[in-house]
Length: 67
Image 1 (tube, rainbow, N blue to C red):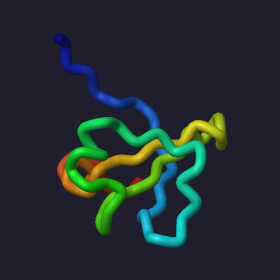
Image 2 (tube, one colour):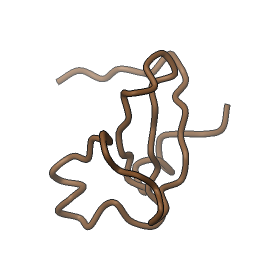
Image 3 (spheres, one colour):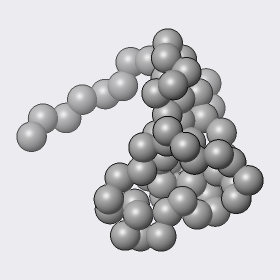
Image 4 (cartoon, rainbow, N blue to C red):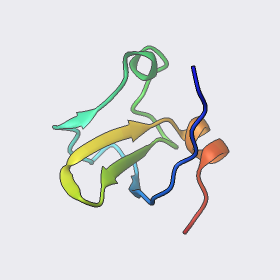
């Protein structure tokens, strides 16, 4: 496995119980850990608004910062 650094930006919004999760990819490990849950984020590819995925809150706090 190799390490890569992200070059671009990603649009995110905080997950909340009222967010429509249809079309949002949620990984199996995240599901096993109880996601979606408070603190998780929903990301969207700025070049494809239909490409949405969940980022766990812990991972997000460790790896992302405001742009």
